[in-house]
Image (tube, rainbow over all chains, first blue to last red; front, side, top):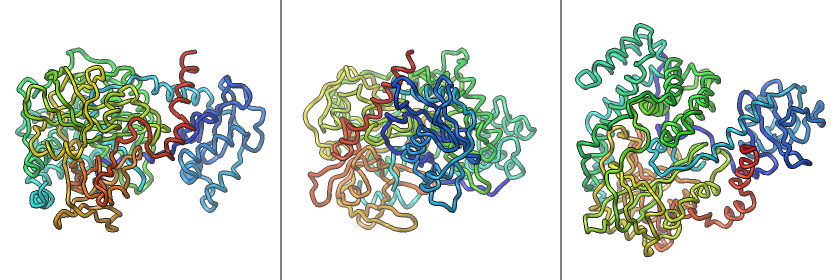
Length: 161
Length: 474
């Protein structure tokens, strides 16, 4: 058994905070399943959305509509949807966290490394990400409660010092 | 609180606390490496746990669990028995600390009626919604915090699916979602990193108990319905990526002339991670009578409001109406010395739940640099640390406001390793006591113009609800 340390005080939450941002262009972004992935509103058609992703390590790029039609703008460089996704990911999590998650060159400044990012085009997990977006939205449809949730004492609302 | 009593509180931990924490630390070390491989030291820690609970009603099940882990069968009833033993120890620590705090505060406390001391338990049958949670929690324990990979961490989502639908299982759902988010953010742990063993074991043990069929759904039957004047003292704000809760601490002056009592009223809502800071309070817009009293600093008249045995009102805006303007510090001065504090329901007893309202005045706020940046309230030479990680971003109560304060309404908190601290709910400026800052000043919208205009411009909640309306009901 490894030497044991009980760790930090048990009521300090351990998920780094995310930042407020405008959601009209990119309603959903996450660092999950080894990718920066999310949903980007179409510039032209109001109903249409694109599901875009960048893989950690390989930096493989994918972008398609939620009906799995590939994005026409995606070549060897990120299309405008992936650009928008990365911009919002940067606002949401901070450039450092995004660059570290994607395993970009640590010798380069995170902002610069993200701007210079390119990679091979590969089919992405469009359906999975879109389903996760719907699941995310469904939280806002769940009713609230006034029954006490004592477990929330482990999750005090705080601020970065 | 009198400085002499505070000194006493800060100087000495109640007898037995250290020994009880050593036992839970031993179990937590086993949970860090996984029940599948306790090793010699872990086996010894589990034997200590069995010995410590040997004269309690848990004796037989803990003994069986320790034997099962020892022989490589750490599933079945073993996780629940270990979680139960850990909860019993944490409960004992809680009781000792709360008694110590009550003594220091001179606070009278209600007894739990016999009928509420042992909760009736679930309706009897197995609830299939709990099965997924139980098996995920058992898998976590078998793998250990060091052995959790990305897929196992992501298993929280599947365990959650049936729970989210059922508001009576909200406690378990927010807990699993909160733990799952932390595991996803940190697992697999990188090489040498130590897991936050005490925290994750706390959350795990609580979840395991809430996932038992015997765990009652919902908050249980109210003890009574109460009427009278409610004077809010302050709001304790809780948040994780998918949940937001405001717990209002208040004094109830019952209409029959009975002595004043300390009560709480909670309101919570599911949320998503990007809703934070200025966009949080909008989630609770359905409780405008309660929130209005917080933002507007007035009392509430309640009539027939259900009250649980643990001192929690089951808030219903329909049973409340706005009352006269009420200064929180005046209410605290008038009542905090004598108001009757509620009993703590058996399964909620844990040091992390201790949140005793307290009024502190006549101190000097002193910033400190070491061992970490912090703030102490110096009361006649006794220094009470301020719990800075509990100053919510959804308010103007920041380090600056706390450091410039001369009076504070707060909650006494305790955490293993750091001991007692105070969590400010509201402060009055030292130089201008009429200038107050409270955690719920933004309850009806940010009072800071910068955040008010940001909220107007981005309206994240409105944007996401509009999306949800279009995409989820196609």
